[in-house]
Length: 196
Image 1 (cartoon, rainbow, N blue to C red):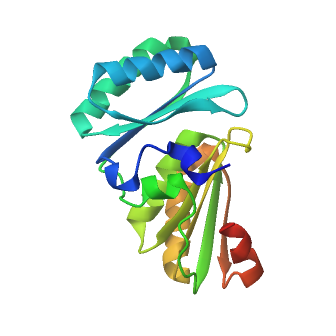
Image 2 (image 1 turned 90 degrees about the vertical axis):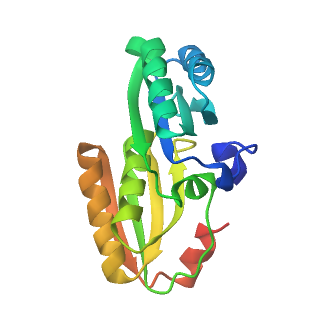
């Protein structure tokens, strides 16, 4: 899968807005209806409106905070009982959207952190929290595709910063957390696989 496919090839990282929101639906048909309603209600940018494992639909969008809140309210109204989860992050970390777009190759000198969650929304929210907690680099946020609906993200930095960020992300994910690990001085062989 192309990295741009994860977020949408027409959306550049520079176009990311200060707020991001998501609605996940159990129905694919309802999900597309939600995406349409979101786009029509408010001047937001649809970042992702697609099917995900295991047969759900995710609408991810961004914009200024008031417009994103308005679009989210309308999307939830349309989703009704088909809504599996939603989230809104005002003042999103600037590395989050580029990390969702695909791996960001950077030099990993000290530590690699990995946080795995049960849902797309919890992965995005926890990744934002991790990036805001410590001086770490978000490498990638991978969502649902070929993951059975789960999400995970990778980050790098000093051992202390990565441990702090991973701990904050785990706390943020709560019951949605599946696993978190910190790998000091990851092997070159592993790093090569991360950026393929």
